[in-house]
Amino acid sequence: MTERYKPSWVPEADDDKFACRVMRGLNDSPLRNTTSTPPQQTGKRPAKLTVDDYVEGILSGNRMMLSRAITLIESNAAAHFEMAQQVIQKVLPYTGKATRIGITGVPGAGKSTFIECLGTKLCQEGHKVAVLAVDPSSTVTGGSILGDKTRMFTLSRQENAFIRPSPSGGTLGGLTRKSRETLLLCEAAGYDTILVETVGVGQSETTVRSMVDFFLLVVLTGAGDELQGMKKGVIELSDGIVVNKADGDNKPKALITKSEYNRILHFLRPATEGWITKAYTCSAYTGEGVMELWHDVIEKFIEQCQANGVLQERRKQQTMSWVYSMVEEHLHNLFYRAPRIIACKDSVENQVLQGELTPTLAVQQLINTFIEEKLEPIGSKNNPILK
Image: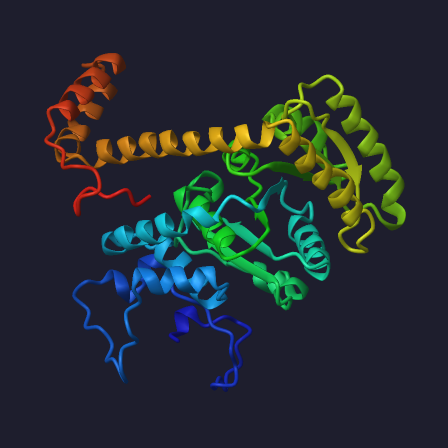
């Protein structure tokens, strides 16, 4: 480790017993230097896994194989894309049986603590719980802390739990194709409860809503979350609101906040047909109210929505929404990667900035240029769906 990346808390006599290290950022990574000589490989290279190896491992509940399959999906290498899709296609018949819960809230609301408390208690009741936690990626280095396994210490020790922190990759909310496919793999591996934690930036809730059954908003007392929630529209997407940290001296304030949210919800249209969204209180620290929220609210919601067909219809709509969102994303990528667009973009931008071309005419010119571009078939080596 060079002096530049040596943290101030590392002792002078640093040796192998000191495990703390600071990873290099993307811009400084030697992997970005294509001229550098790769490190010497020692020992035998591990055997390359086949599609059947991945599928067999996932269906048998092998957590190591599940992790490797998720890594395959998250890879941006074109060579991995086809194999990843084959794996998903083969496990698809074994998906769709889990309860999918989306959990969002402002930073500091205690989402991770709540998830750990709920997940641990569910594991103790015999459930298999998978936690998909999206960590925000740095806009400078592109890296993520991925610290949820550290924060969820108790849950990570449960045999029936699987925690997968994933970098958002700079996308809004961090929930893209890869997150949805990761969810499917966890279901195929036998996890009956999927908890999806968002970044909590306040702008990605619609993406989370489009991939879960029940959407829970975790809030605090006295933080102005009521007004912020209305402004962002997040309350209108929620099937339940829970005021966390309702313990000790803060409990009376939490009850007041709960009443305020219920008053707001009275004037809003419920997010799910036939279901009345309400606010509740809990303490993820003491565990009070957490399992009551699960049994009396979430389980009742799933039972009701399965009975009236709302859940099945929501799943169908989510699947088709996923299809067309990927179409839009792929068209976006095709446009900005098209050689003709890259060649003329700067010129068009300069004409717009200098007043020589109106924005509308600029759009028309760019689109016409894109239409003239010779595109390769979707799914080819040079035109895969990677993002």
